[in-house]
Image (cartoon, rainbow, N blue to C red; front, side, top):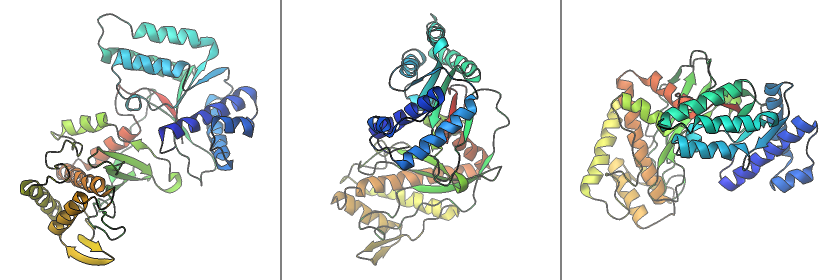
Length: 390
């Protein structure tokens, strides 16, 4: 919902306050109160909060009497136990809930049960996590304890949607497949902006069995860092445009790729073929030249115009020239994002190679389905249940 953690916290607390006032008090909070919670509150955000609240009310039915938690209360209580007792290192990889509702009359029982289930001597952390998830599924189904994940709502959606994830009883999983010819790793350098690749990502499109369209990208999401981690992010298109599914969990990626005998491309900082800025060698350059030739011959990857532009004029073409110019630009620090976008593009090529290998094995549909559920945080028993509003 936002690009900054502090801003996200304000926005989600805005949702929490709006939920509580409408559901428990039967009226919307005043603009003055909302501005004291979220200083960016506006008519557009009021519209978003109204849509979110209606979706939550529809799910709850006549239920009320909840405590609404984010920064204090039962949400951090559960998060702390998940980390200390259940081996959860990154909360959102386990459960992307942003706000937690708990029945006030059941809060002590819920907290006590969670503590008891995760404090059994001799039990592994994985087993404890399984018990925690099972109990949270039970209480979610009974609408006693409800973790809510908030996603952006497309402006053209008149009403927000909601769906329960990881709560058991799920129907046959939706199959997802790649849109043929959509794998793009554009290698045009300096045409849109001096010294920078026109894009820093590997882009691709997917379609669900029901016709839903999804755009994905694998890239460094912080170009100002010279060598950073490349993540894969999915965003629905069409009627749900703008409502991100989210970043695909590394656990989901590793699970699928491990089963295929493949390794997930590492971060640019750890990639043995991406040296620090100013330390490029002929052998490192040769690796990327060979990889480009391999990918280009596959016929699966659209590299666009492989050329270099300066002052709106094409000054060189071909991958070797692009590589040399990109190395020169990052060495001279021609732009603060030169190195970050360059290393992102290189790792994107390694991700493109993963797609090519998987396609050759005839497993593209399984791969796309794994990405889809990995973004939804619905890829295994280790994931906690939640209600998604989008």
